Image 1 (spheres, helix red, strand yellow):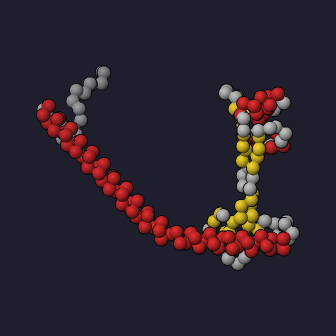
Image 2 (image 1 turned 45 degrees about the vertical axis):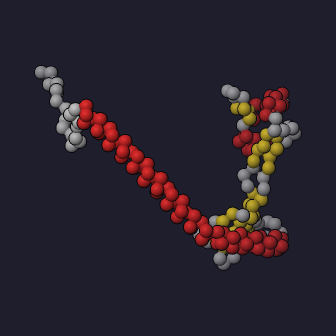
Image 3 (image 1 turned 180 degrees about the horizontal axis):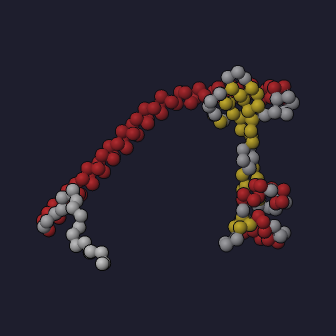
Length: 174
């Protein structure tokens, strides 16, 4: 026997307007609620800006003190680096409260004259430094194997050394 087709919809706990005028009134109410919610959201954002500004003004002297401590520690570390790092064999100086360290940033590939660089890479058969569809330079491949493109004009790879203080449990970069 085929299943019965249900003709009634399930009852809802939501009031359903019964006339055009009732639907119009519901739309008006909906618009009013949207306006109220927008005002509340703006008020909340205003309060958050004021709250954040208050905390930022309290935090700024602490940040300035951190920068001063970092600068002083870096000056001391640079002056004593040779002796404290066993002639440069390590990049960290350990203390009871934490460490001072020097670390290299991730290599950054800079390209000038993209079309010229693409042509040079293709002419030298270095397609492994290119991505296809459309042809573009694969900076990740260049950063991973920079020696392959060392002589190509328009490609430079930069890397800097950062100084860091790492109190136990916290990491702060210069």
